[in-house]
Length: 192
View 1 (tube, helix red, strand yellow):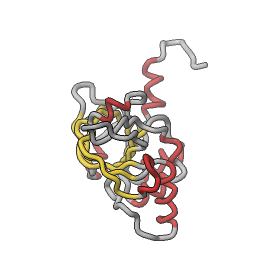
View 2 (cartoon, helix red, strand yellow):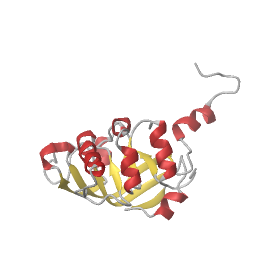
View 3 (cartoon, rainbow, N blue to C red):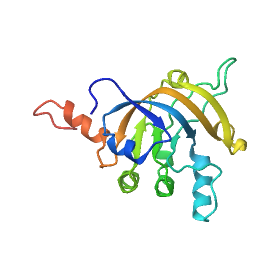
View 4 (cartoon, helix red, strand yellow):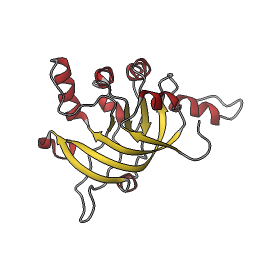
C-alpha cells in the first residue's frame, strides 16, 4: 500500500503498470479513458459474443462506470461520480478477456470478476462516491465515442488529469474491501 504521495498513473495502461499496483495504493490517473454503464456494457458484450468489432478498442484501456450530467457553461462535463460497479459484473469478465485493463467504479466486485481480474492481469479502482463535482474537475475533455442514443450512458472518451482513485482489486487477488476491515478491527472484537 502506498503510504506516501499518490502514485501517478497514465491511461491507457501497460501490463507492467498494472502489475505494480496493489490493493490500497492511491493513484492519480491521467490520460485517456472511456465511460460505460449497463446499457453500453450489454451492447459491448453482445458484440463480443457474436465476434464483431467493438465501436472503441478497449484493449489496454480504462472504463469509468459513470453517467455524467450535462456540462455547465465553460466545462467539458457535468457531475461525474462513479456508478456501482456490480451492475456491470455480468459483462466484465468478457471485456477483461478482450483486453480491458482497468475499471473505475464504487462498491465490491463479484467473485467471478475478481477471478477475471487476476486471470487477465487487470485492476479495479474506486472513485469517490458522492463527489461527482470533484471527479468532474479532473476531466479536461469529454466527447461521445459510441452509442449517442444512450444519452448520459453513451460511451464517452475522456481526457483526465490527476483523478484521485484507490486500488481495490489488484492482479494478485488482493481486495481492499476485504482486507481493510481486518486492519481496523479492535483486538478481541468479532464482526457482527
